[in-house]
Image (cartoon, rainbow, N blue to C red; front, top):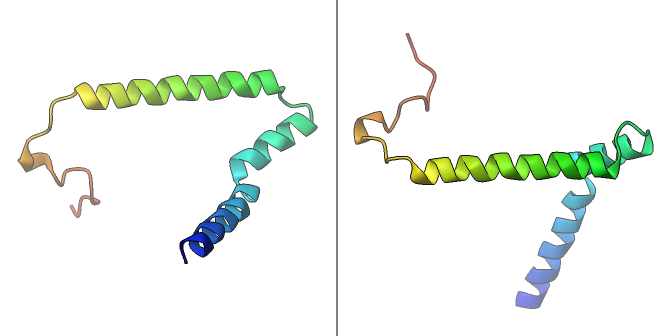
Length: 78
């Protein structure tokens, strides 16, 4: 049963990986010479840096007070 589940998950992952819009866009950009692999690697590196900085900022920030728990979660009904 576990082996079957693992193969189903692998097949599902392969299915969605083939449909990944980011991968498709990268392929399109390279094929149409709109960007090089080096350009795309530089963009990926910058994205990783921005995400890392954001995570560090969040980890180092104080926990907000309980009174702010639901702020900016739902549209303001006013």
